[in-house]
Image: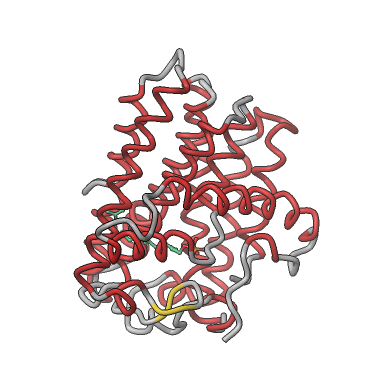
Amino acid sequence: MTPPQSASSVSAAPGGAALAGRLGELARRVDAHLPTLLPEASQRPAPVHEAMHYALTGAGKRLRPILTLLVADLFGARSEKVLDLACAVEMVHACSLVLDDLPAMDDAALRRGRPTTHRVYGEAMALLASLALLNRAYAVVAESATRLGLRRYTPEDLVHHLAAAIGSDGLIGGQALDLLATPADTGLDVLEFIHSHKTGALFMAAGELGAMAADAKRRELEMIARFAKNLGLAFQISDDLLDVLGTVEQTGKDTGKDRGKVTFVRLLGVEGAQALEEELLRFAVASLEPLGRRAEPLRDLAHFVRHRSH
Ligand code: GRG
């Protein structure tokens, strides 16, 4: 099977070549840095460490750490410490994918163009590796926030922000409601609630951590949060659309997995879901207006989501 494209290979979208360059460069920085933040795969207990590397370094798009890096850059922070922070966000994402793929959840066979972590390492090791990634993410955030020595935010602020995004009021809560949702009791408002938690919360945290890492003002932080929240929800809608319209080769995961589930496409149809995605991306981009041309890379990211094929 053809491996899924990485962010560096997107070119189908109008203006995609320029976008591919910038996103691709950041994705490669993240890719190179991720394994350096983990214990060696051969270190005891090797199955856990191998599974951590496997889950973290598969061919993902790295959109969440890219968002952290772009936001930090926008407010003037570009150091290695910010890259650590961005990679911690990707660790949380990888943790959530491993859990999401487990038989007790989506029971997925394929992720990022290859067998899911539990299919390779078994459920017990996958579960432990995923928790170890989450644990490592918190440690990396605490360490990098301390080393950043920020004026407006304490390391605790950054750790709390991430913890809140993941908790029962964030990803975990959204995932729980998603698993419990039935077509009979799930309208558009409930579905929006589910996905602004399950998916949107980590996009928000990614953007906010980037802003905090650059000591951005509270007002700027709120602006970024609004952008990232709408971007995240739009991204989820594009994920629902790809489940119906995309191929296994494009997405690197089983398509049609959402059949029987409540999704934006099920509630609104393909065209309705596309229209809502566009509207959310318009909201996202509108919240950047006060930042002027400086926010162009974030507009490019919204453009990528709009036109993504993987
Ligand atoms: C404890 C972190 C944690 C989570 C527990 C399992 C769970 C709660 C939440 C699941 C969250 C989840 C997997 C949401 C789906 C979001 C989504 C659209 C994922 C696909 O993201 P892409 O396309 O994937 O960015 P790549 O492979 O490119 O990184």
